[in-house]
Image (tube, rainbow, N blue to C red; front, side, top):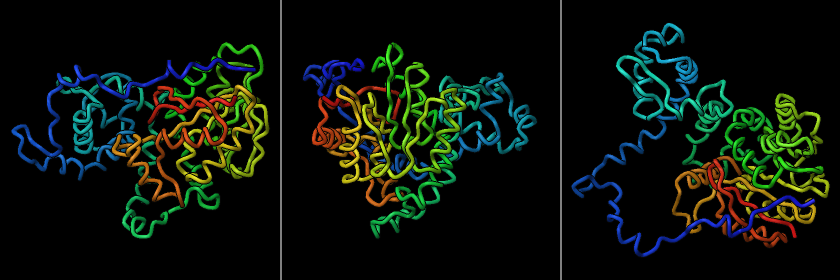
Length: 368
């Protein structure tokens, strides 16, 4: 069975600006310069407080601020009475959230913004609250040892090894489910899964919460999923699949990604935020194994944090490369050019990018 795949031309992303358009742009302001062109420490000061926004958001989540405001505008006093937090503490947090444009204030009452209403209310399917808990409780403590990781080139905690990584991932993958859910839905729509008339076999590599396979299975009763991950993590995958009504369509394959039984004849293979922790050599081997597991015409879809080809931005993938220094033996953030090269070497054709609500566009390629 061949699922519909859009042409690479349809997915092409503009990479150059015409001379006419560029000539109309005002000259870029030098980083760190004020409005009069003189150097200012303002940006440096903002960077020094970069840890503050996620911790402020997590505190608001802990006291159910977004959930309470989802019921309607409230004053500080009303929120304090409902949440059990102090008026002084909430005042500081609420005003900071207004400054971050995650809340608005009208007179004495605070309200949600469209962004916080969509992504920070616990009852909404897109809630990212678990992500902030993961950052503050698991990631930030390890980042405090960054200098040691830079000195030695070795991880603080090797999350890519099962003896350390299985429990680490099992604790937080459920909270990451909403982060990739919409991107997984868009992938399915792009590949025509909702219109499938025959069986669609999905290989979910490094399944974690199971979000990629679950989202595709929800789009069609013809979808079956083979999730692959460590046994401890697959317990979470199975639980999440049952919660989303597709638990009976999973056929799990436990084990290390390079040793587990992938099976054959799959129509779609998803590799959602896995290559960065595997490192270059294991990633190349994994893509070859994925190629062998796909049916002719099958598609591999890769979710990653992708910097530009000269690694000058965007900031998030570059930050994530540092995160891989701290948490893996050889992980990194890889460019589209690097991943496309590995895909071609594995036998795939037409590496391309698909825009989706994810940290970076998804990377797709086809087995001939």
